[in-house]
Length: 324
Image (cartoon, rainbow, N blue to C red; front, side, top):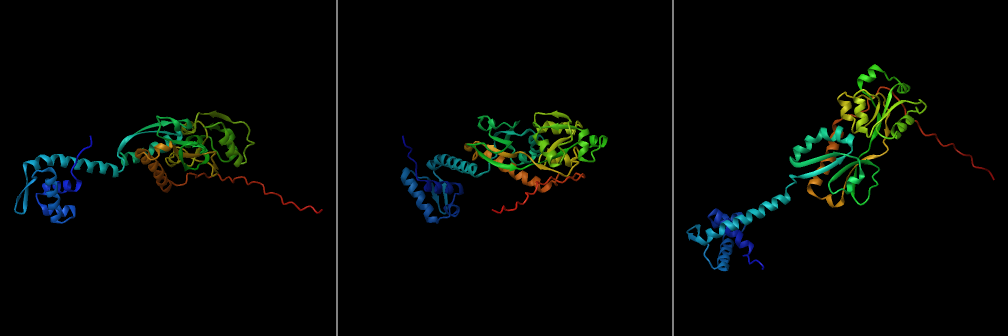
């Protein structure tokens, strides 16, 4: 059955007048004339067929009927105001599950997590180390930060950062086994965070593919290979995003001034239907903004003293037109 409710404006006039105990103050709050408030209250009284106020000169006092009506009206207006404020207010609470590339999670995201918590103390995060594009479709995951080529379809994605790769090593190891030229890498243990493609790319740029066989260790991801380098187990490839803090703290050094573009890039990805969800939007906006802050405060990580020039592609030889 449809509700039969009095008109909204007379109810607003009634509530404001009862709260102030004055028609004039109610009129000032509602930005209407004294006569308009009086007319709206009389219309409400006629609609309900009861007297809501007792008039005493310039002052008004609630009648028994008015006193009975006021709590329900005030509660209704308070509820509307609170709901409206919640809609307009930035998201302040909720739960969010994030999967992130292991190295980026450990070396970049977690050190900056306090910034997110300060902005959104009511948002509870669940952080999982993963670089599996299958997480995009998982009902248990809200946002993915992936390392890849960005070819995923039927989802929202945006490139977060490009990467440059360069060798990193612990100060203790390089002091004990100095690296003065690229040829000295032959006496080091090479730490891989992939199948070997990234080191091959760097060595090719350094014109050092002929160094022969190395002592090598392979790890499941770049986080583990970089951690192994921190502990002095060999030389790994760091990147311009995740290695910056370790370099700034002196836990790693970069012996060479040569970097090469990584095979892939970092992307922020989520299902299209989640992109506009307030807690999802809050995290995505924050991670892009935090990257800009980091870019403005951290110096370029390449401080290597050993200069290596990238190999230039051979210049195509000009061909002399054949005379027929």
